[in-house]
Image 1: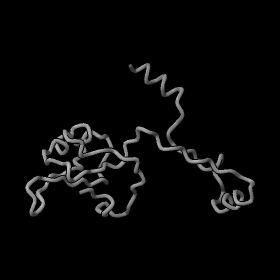
Image 2: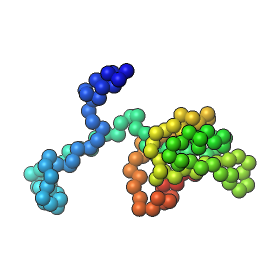
Image 3: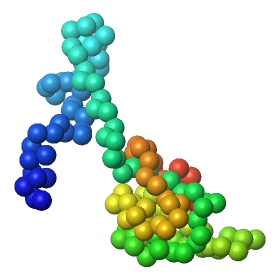
Length: 134
């Protein structure tokens, strides 16, 4: 199994983007001027891999509030809480802590959690609305 993985990695292309130009420029604006003049080319971005584990999507209506996702999460991203006026528990995820292991997705018995292709999640506020999933 290990050798199969090693061989696969040796012949597959990397999933990361190379630096936009071949050599480190002295100035970014100088490189942009050369690109505009047609004297330099920028590497095209690498397409998103089909099995990317990005931001976790949560289907609130499907969730039964069992708490299995909270128990298996190694980074303690998920917290269980009971919203006012509702019978079932719901979850809240703090994406800034997430390691994108997708163990919560595998543990969910009703498929209320899923991985998405969204991965550009940087924000100066770790409690920003885009980084808290409810």
